[in-house]
Image (cartoon, rainbow, N blue to C red; front, side):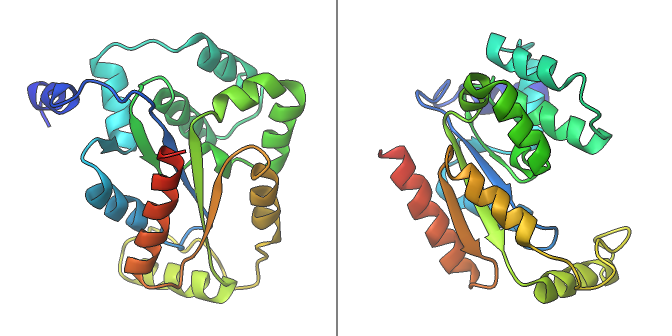
Length: 213
């Protein structure tokens, strides 16, 4: 997309949402976060954007971090984050500086529990400020079905390597983290084995209820 087209997409027919929000998709690899994200964005509103738009907007418009989001970056600067988590932090923060609606399928809430809980313990006000106007959609399934989907994607060439060696992994840690986050953020639990139209309907109803609150 060239710069003129990008700017046109940003400016017309509206400049910025009055009450922008971020939807974070969470769940294990293979539950269909990216697929559901794309389907929702195409059906819900043309003014909802994904990660790539978030990064382009920030760069092309020469945007600056808000003071609160700069504090978030500074807080994590002395944490030993791997490159993957550094990237997630980068676009999660930029999404909250853009004043537009974003759907993110590799989200800040995917951080390990110890990092999220440490952030809340050290900076509770900043933690709550970060999660303002955020919704979490948590997709879950059985380890067996998650493993099988991941294996099929690898065989189809959609992954460079399988994520899981077998189905002997526990969902307990992820579920406990989501239950803890429910104290601060609206969380919708969606069964990834449901038909696509039902998953979309559940998410749309949940998001619309949040917008109309």
